[in-house]
Length: 140
Image (tube, rainbow, N blue to C red; front, top):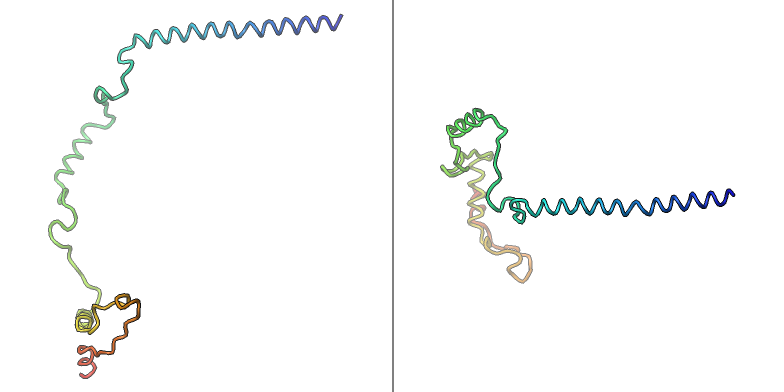
């Protein structure tokens, strides 16, 4: 008797479980149908957002603060000037001008100054010529 009661309870549970999806599906179908009808009657249903112009804008900033910032920016000195557009920046050398001049003269007078090590079939250039500026500096 216990086996038949367990079997009967299982059968009723199975029957109840099998009837649930049909009701749920029917309710879902009705909800989907209502949603489809509402979407079909909606304005601009096939238009992507922004394709008919910009969305309305609502500012969260204080208009007076924005105006004050705009006025301050407009009166700022050199507001639209990029660096160097009004001439070169002031230059301050950190080296001795005489030393720089001597190095520049020695480089300009070097006999092999335009020859690089790669310009002679990948060989290293060793100058055998004397630099006249360096010679005059040593002779003094």
